[in-house]
Length: 107
Image 1: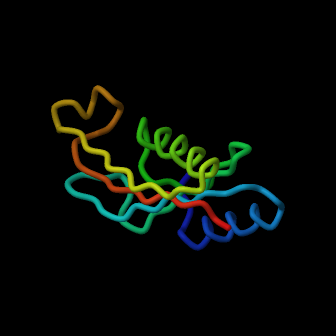
Image 2: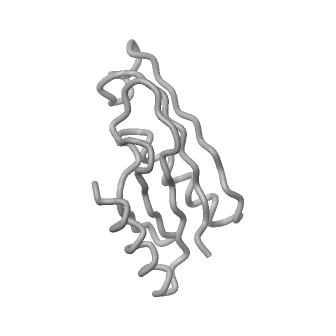
C-alpha cells in the first residue's frame, strides 16, 4: 500500500473530484522504531478506498477508522500510538516506538 506522498495526494484529489468524501492521515512525529517516516500519508474514502500508508498492522486499521469518524463529524484528530518493545510482537509490529498521526477531512 506504499505510495509516494504526491501520488497519495493526487489520488485523494481525484477521489474528491469524483464526489467521494475523503480524509487524509499524515504522520507528524515518530520516536523509536516506525515503519513510515514523518510526512507519510494515507488517504481514506467513506466508501472504503485506501491509498498510501502511515504504519502497518493494527495501527493502519485504527487510523482508517479514525478517518471515517473525521469524515462523519468534520472534526480533525491528532492520534498518538505507542508500544513497548516487549509488547510490539503481540500486536503485529517488529519493535516498539511512538507515532503521532494528524487526520483531517478534505473539502
